[in-house]
Amino acid sequence: MPSTADERQLLDELRDLLAATVEDLTAEEIGPDSSLQDDLGVDSLARLELVAAIEDRWQIEVPQEQADRLTTVRQIAAHLAEAVAAPAGGTA
Image 1 (cartoon, rainbow, N blue to C red):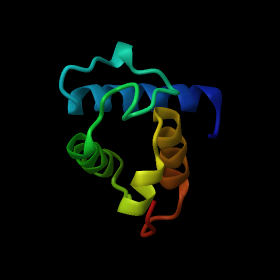
Image 2: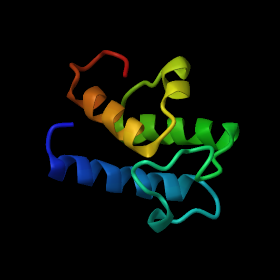
Image 3: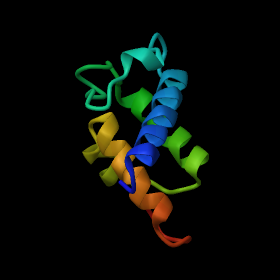
C-alpha cells in the first residue's frame, strides 16, 4: 500500500462498507486481519454483496476468482490500493 495514512483511510472506508453490508456487524468489530468468514461470519451471499458494494464504491471490477482469494480485510484493502492505482479500463 502507498503509505500508512492511505492504508489507514482505506481500511477505515472498507470497515465502514463491510459494517453497512453485513447485518449485525459494526465497524469497531472489524480488525485489519479479521477473516471474513471465520472471524466476521461473512457467508457467500454477504460476500457477493460486499464485492458488489466495493465495485460500486471504487468503480472497479473484481473477478470472482480474485474475490475468492481475498479472505481478510487487509487483503481486500491491499487489492483495492493496487486496483485504484491501476490505469482505467483494467480489472482489479
